[in-house]
Amino acid sequence: MLSNAKEQYDVIVIGGGATGSGIALDATLRGLKVLLIEKNDFSEGTSSRSTKLVHGGVRYLEAAVKHFDKEQYHLVKEGLRERKRLLDNAPHLAHPITLLTPIYNWLEVPYIYAGLVLYDIISGKQRLGKSSIVTRKKVTKLNPSIKKNGLKLAVKYYDGAFNDARMNVALLQSAEQEGATVKNYTELKSFIFRNDKITGIKTYDYINNKEEEFYAKYFINATGVFSDHIRKMADKNIKSIVRPSSGIHIVVDKKFIPSNNGLMIPKTKDGRVLFLLPYLDKCLIGTTDNEAKVKEHLKVSDSDVDYLLEHVNKYFDVNITKKDILASFCGLRPLVDLNHDEKSAELVREHIIEKLDSGLITIVGGKWTTYRSMAEEVVNMLTNTPCKTIDFKLAGSHKIISTKDLADYGLNKETSKRLIKLYGDNALKITSIAKNEVGYDFIDNKYHILNAELIYTIRYEYVKKPLDFIIRRANLGLIDKKESIKTVKKVSEILVKELEYNSEFLQHLYNESISLLEEGF
Ligand SMILES: Cc1cc2nc3c(=O)[nH]c(=O)nc-3n(C[C@H](O)[C@H](O)[C@H](O)COP(=O)(O)OP(=O)(O)OC[C@H]3O[C@@H](n4cnc5c(N)ncnc54)[C@H](O)[C@@H]3O)c2cc1C
Image (cartoon, rainbow, N blue to C red; front, side):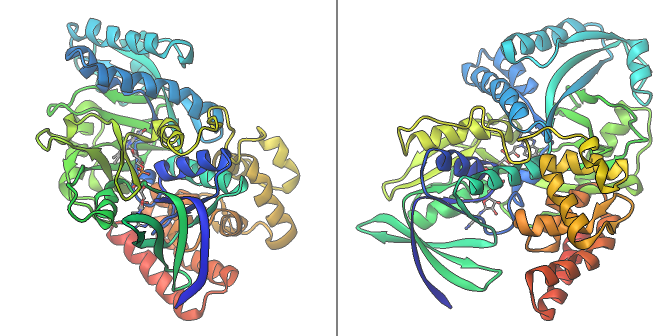
């Protein structure tokens, strides 16, 4: 069925990850009429699968210094500047984090310490704290599971940590509140051309099963690792520019690494950086870096898990086995490769912007931390109106609320804390739905996830399928696979009722969700 709608926009953004969502918000704030389409759920691509660090990149700084590489240096500087903005604009979703780097060789102390002091200097006024040396005694007290044999000391430094999937939805809510139209489960199928210029798009809406057409002046391809596919729809003879690299994370109980700071192993035997980070009251461990093919629903390979476990068990006095893994996920980095000859771990995490003769603008590469400045750069190509996102508070961040503000709702403290951490001031909308409509029943008792929370995310956060909620809004799927599987039935039932789906679709949603949770989402 093709709907008659032929809507005209200023800008159509293809892709609802960090890059596209940042562009949608920036362009809308500058007065442009924006449509953003995403073929799956928002952030379902790479943007919910990051290490969740807001950073300049200590590793890139090392490369900048070692090779006198100006490009890498600017990348670090830009990251550090944007780090502070991201933390300020969504304080419920992003916060400073202390990271410790254990050192086992005295000769490495001056090198690593000087590097981290330089990181502080480049941060300038946006510094989050001062790097310092921590004695062996103090490190082992703060981190009882750290490997003690041969440990000399640790260097402490600061970066940011954030909730990627929820940040993504906050960007889109903000864009929508300012007038943008955002649609998930809507895939770009082809471009419409007039005199070799793109004037419109044909899409398919998988929830309502309909084809649609939309028209605009500008078309932005922000599809991450899928960018080449979209570029080739505009010009089939064009060369590829994206070289995806996969990275996995595993999540384990905090008892294994019981510390409130993060830990960074600066160099594994194959030259990688390993992070162990506190994450939603668990411990997040990552990551790997392997050449990969563009694919959806990525499986976490056994060999990648073995790699992480081998290194964690080597650098910590723990014995974590596969049975201890609560959840795992894999993501694809949209790395830009114009030369096709470097190892993916060595490719600069720089973004590029390209404009084709047909008018299609592609932005690809970069990192979550710099989504805002990347968006600013693209939107500057469309309008002279000044950028407004530098200090724009995102949805959920307009008022700082505490558990006291939720005291009248009869919630336990754990639930209140969790709601505030994930939803910021929108926690009040959830408690109001609980109080006035559906009561305080839990979908999941272990993690205090309320029925009202699901209803809120269906109404205000574009939830259309069970895993949109379980993984990307409530974040349960990112920390506890078993518990996630248990919630699918209840989530599907509430969803079907709220969105008036038919019973056939209920069965489909249930089967699809279970299979993705079991096989890899
Ligand atoms: C393992 C790993 C760890 C990382 N850690 C960090 C970190 O700690 N800090 C940091 O700053 N960055 C980190 N990054 C990088 C960061 O996550 C990415 O740079 C960022 O998420 C990319 O966002 P994006 O919007 O460009 O791509 P995506 O999030 O992939 O979004 C592109 C979207 O386009 C959609 N799409 C594709 N085709 C179509 C179509 N035809 N129609 C409609 N939609 C379509 C896709 O479904 C997808 O959702 C990490 C990345 C990985 C993989």
